[in-house]
Length: 331
Image 1 (cartoon, one colour):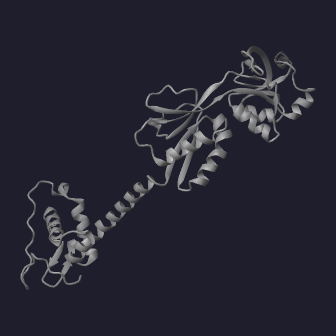
Image 2 (image 1 turned 180 degrees about the vertical axis):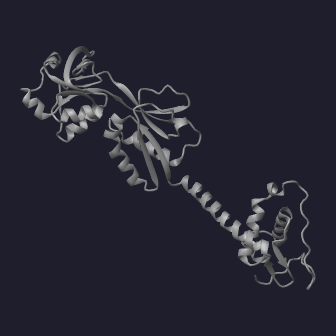
C-alpha cells in the first residue's frame, strides 16, 4: 500500500499493539457489515486517505470503523506505520474472503433494484391442460419475446393446486376460485359451441338443421356415460330477442374422453361433432380444421379467471405477465 499515516499511528519504529478483544460474548454476532465494507475500501484504495475520499467520509471515521472491526474480530488486520499501511496475514485472508462476498451482495442488490425497473426472473404459471395447451403457447411466446429477462414455467394440471402452498405466481382458473388470499382478474365468459370437421360433415350428408338433429349424428363426447351424454344448449336470441331458448339433447358417440384436447383432435380427424370451448374451437376454425355447427347454439357461459396470490409486493415480472394476459387474452 502507499504511504498513509494515521493520526493515531505510533511513533516511527514502534511496534503496534494487538487490539484488545471485545469482551462481548459471541463477538461475531456484533459485526457491522458497514465496518467490513470500509475495511475492504481501505485495502482496495491503498490507504485511509484515499478510502475517505472515495466514501466521502472523514479519515478519522474510517479509522475508527476499522479499529472497531479489529476489536470485534479480536485480531489485527492492518499494520500501521508512519509511512505505510499493510495487511497482516489475518487481514490478507479476511480481505480475500469478504471482498468476494461483498461483491456478491452488490450484485444481489443491483438485481433487486433492477427488478423494480425491468421485469426479470422466473414466473411459475399453472393452467388446465385443455385450455393451457391450446391458448397459452402463442400468448406466452409473444410475452417472452417482449421480456427476454423473464422465464415462464408452465404446469398444465388437471387438479387445482393451492397456489400459495405450491409456489405458483399465476393460474388460469375456470370459475371463481374458492381459496382465500387470492386476487382474480376476469379474462372472459367462456362458452362451449358445436364444431365438426369438413370431412365429417360431407360424409354425413351435411350439418344438422336443428338441435334435435344432433341425436342422428355421431358425436365426440367429453366424460360420457357408456357412449351417451346430454347437452344443454342455449339458442342465442337474434337481434333484440328477449331471451335464449334452452334445448336438452341426448347425443351418442363411439369416442369419448376426459381430455378436451383429445376431443378436439378426434373431431378434426372426422370422428363426429364435438362440443368445445369457443376458445379452442375458433382457433381450429381459423386454420380450416373445423367448421361451426348450429352456430346459434352454445352452452351457458362459465367465467374464466386469471388468479394470483394477494400481496402488497407483486414481482414486476408477475405484474407484466398478468397485464399482458388481461390485455391480450382472446375474447
